[in-house]
Length: 259
Ligand code: TMP
Image 1 (cartoon, helix red, strand yellow):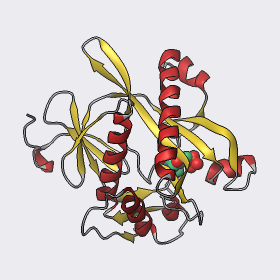
Image 2 (tube, protein in one colour):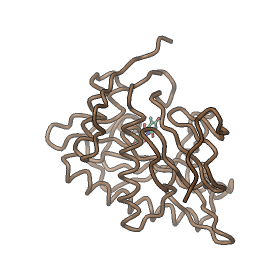
Image 3 (cartoon, helix red, strand yellow):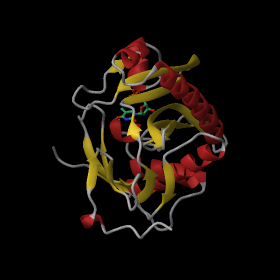
Image 4 (cartoon, helix red, strand yellow):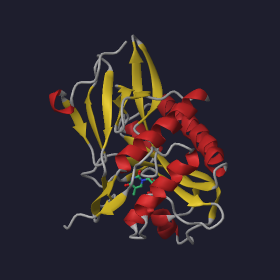
């Protein structure tokens, strides 16, 4: 059995991102992923806090990672530890955000002059390098393989997994009255002795997916925060409620920091 998780202050912080912190795990090869309430837009124009978001995203991501694991997608997820933390396998992160789009939205709709909400002729994959300093630039498979961020074989595996994740989650969300407009996933290399597997890492939550109500097209994701649509907290709660995993007594509210 794994030893009890040490109090946060006594753990070594490995990495701090905008929405999560990674701490050294209780065993070699593990990390503790802590979900913060902080929210920001990609361009950092907007920064704020959605109270309780970390708790909800921890639960949503746990639920979706377990479901994906059950249908054969390898993930870094081990188990949820508490309200805000989950134990994950330490992986060598591939520095690419993989975005799969089913319906035109936001920057993609603007880039191609397509009305938001237009279904795409087929699902389209895009890659971004995950560097915040460079504003996560769009890159192609040529950049990824030429710069050695992933090998052609790894990229094939990533594409195959992303298609399966998108297909499975599209169906899962449709079953609870939500359209999966697009999603962003990240992968890592998991080493077991000399063997290496590509596994799904990071998180899947309304921070990293676009989810619209099937009937009303109401946005139930982080675009409510990015686009100042209001009822941000309610949207996260509604997704968790529909998935049947809303933690008891969690009340969310948006508090935007003054810049
Ligand atoms: P985009 O249309 O803004 O490029 O977003 C594509 C996907 O990436 C969408 O499903 C939401 C996710 N995403 C993030 O994970 N982080 C971000 O900062 C942004 C803007 C989007």
